[in-house]
Length: 356
Image 1 (tube, rainbow, N blue to C red):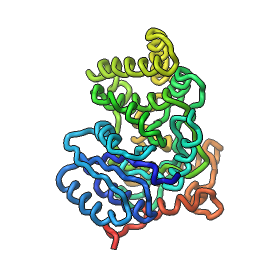
Image 2 (cartoon, rainbow, N blue to C red):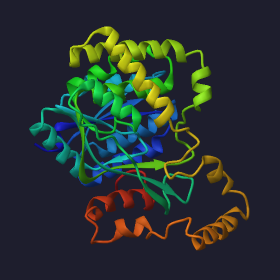
Image 3 (cartoon, rainbow, N blue to C red):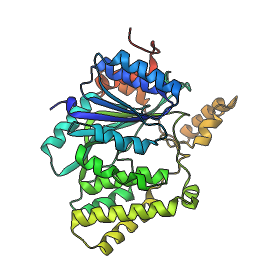
Image 4 (cartoon, rainbow, N blue to C red):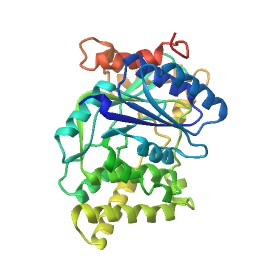
């Protein structure tokens, strides 16, 4: 068993610079798995991506398809059908999954049939610059689900009380296809993330291993979801919610052998937990700082005011004095150092677009 047993599913749209950076990262590490790319970009980005694939294909197994006018979820659905490996993992074009950790996850699933998904430790990174490369400004933990109740109903309830995105985990290819089979019935963007995540935990237990696994980059070109009020006021909300409830209820019936009425009660209760206990407004960054505040940092003099404010807060013991997380990851004593450094170099070293 190795990373060659995993297919990475990467939808991309008009971010060829991020995608090329990601391909260089896997090319440098000699990744042996399959990289499935679904491209919904404009012509100039498609051209750059195709050129990069031609340059990197000597060491990478890349399956590339153009999907004009497809959204990311529709691309993921199509890419899963192309996967010929027993395991798959989704990764955005601006993020990173670590090959060594992917191998450990595949080994875990191979020996734990009662687990549906598994992942390692995740972090978010923000650069000081607004581009693809630059010095690291912030690092923070990126939470991922750990759900290990025996029944599918209880797993769904536990998960929606403390929601975090589940689709970055390594999945078995068959259940993954089931997660996305009805995705075209949804017209709402948030539900196209929420429904597959819920399917994931219904299908089986979810584990986190102690290995460096995922890096998510926060930046101004990320795709943002609507606020809670905007979402629920959207004309797409109600029809997508009905599809969401129907699909999840049918899966619960199959997993727990309960009635439709019982299954719908579970789904509705779980969604209520999501709205009241787990919903995170998109203006929050992964670092717990409102996006408005981050944008405000661009105003002249704002950074000075922020530094003075932090000094005052620290003097009042309202802000911790923890060591810079970047220093911990860069330290050779860190258990994550060896796997972190290739990602760090991919983010901070401005290289030629293609290998020389």
